[in-house]
Image (cartoon, rainbow, N blue to C red; front, side, top):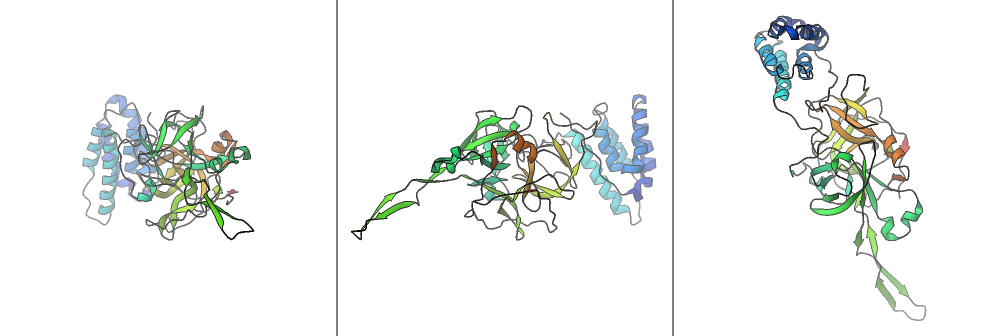
Length: 383
């Protein structure tokens, strides 16, 4: 399914320089295309040549002919010797990339990554699983989105139950009953899928913890009797891969919130932490994923999502989960579609975010963004 996106702002000071090139490119179109080309030309005054070329590749009517049109358009741009030449060259490269996208189909972020590629941060491919970890599925791999537990204490009576965790993933990552892996180790089974949303739930049993020993000393004798005490430790923790101290680390999740007015981040195993997103409205005419309850955000950079990021967390700078990554637009991968956490916890009304395991510390790994933002509503309990 082709997804459309909203054009970003261009440098309006250079728009008038491309008007002759636009006219010549429009002349290359057949008479059936003239009306659409004229409309696109008029919108050029507001959006610029890069966005005009990108608008062509969003048109299903002219999909087959857009590449030659864009190529002709690029060849018409004059070699201007003044100080704007470098800017025009940059726009040429951007337009060329947009035209190339129609000739080479890019991978949707909603598709599980088929190639078994190691993450840039090797910690994303290691236990315990947290929000942002790489998880394997039968079709490739996805990213873990949130770690939850049942609200009812009857599910946490025994040490085994108390250490069991559930992962929230994107529904399209795996079939119901499918096995989920960390590297090649099976860690859980998909036990639930939403009827309408892009959500599924994976049960992750714990692993035995051999470090626990129970000892008892009798009052009449100084000898202590020690027996192994079977204890369990979770294989998924309520943390998220986000920047800390200038590096990517396993940071405790503070809670969940709605999307803030400012920028926020995604944390996928393929693209890492990308704090380039701002919320946008899904108006009429914008192609959307085939799921209900979808929100959207516009990215300030191309290729901000990639195959394998599906299911990963959308998160604020202050570590509040906003949602679960669903997909992106096909060509630029600069539009984010996600399921909000409010919808996640509404459908999973018997679950809540897992308690924080304070022993799950981690040193940093990669460089972090320098700016900051916030948007918290629900705080996370530590336990």
